[in-house]
Image 1 (cartoon, rainbow over the protein chains, first blue to last red):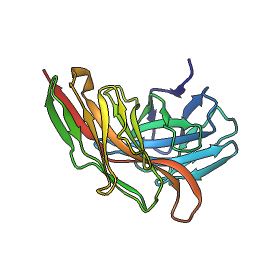
Image 2: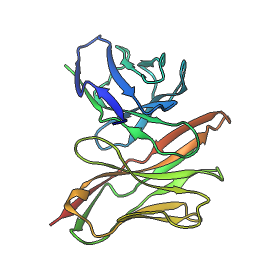
Image 3: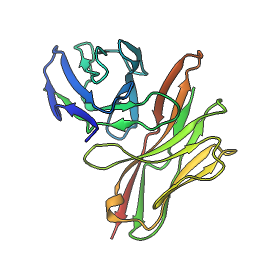
Image 4: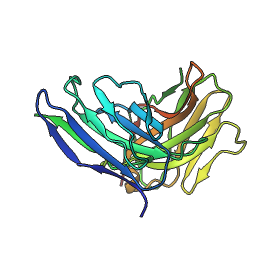
Length: 113
Length: 120
């Protein structure tokens, strides 16, 4: 079945440590997105990529980095510069054209030890 | 900049009754798309319904319908015959095609959500 796979489901980060969240899709979608969700809040866009080898900052990109070397993969690195990383992270993809919907993964809960 | 507002943090509804979840939006674009997503406690985001700004008919998908009032900039979700499985967070979202600088963005902007609890 086609879809988006995020791993791991739960991740713990130590102080000063970088961690990477995985996002893989087999939907042949051009566009991919990373959102952050805090309790009681909506989703905020971190980074997005409309095509391989290209990506743009979203509304809250500071302390995060991404790469898009393959169409299927869009990993997110939470760096030590992100001082409040505890949140639920959702990856999404779309065909990248028009007003089509986003397909979401099941998310990764990141917590700081 | 585009903005989505959901003013109801939480709602209760009796099983089998209908419920309306409010959503207002702000945009200067003539062409835009509006979405509703459901997020159960498992965390996944489930697409429910879509309304295009030029669609003359209100969108419907099974028990979900979208009450689209363009002049008032509202896109309320109506769930008919509520079921216990409808208990979840519901998010309204708008597709932004161009940013204020004119560059293509093609990203989805979300409201803060409404937590719906269906009571037996």
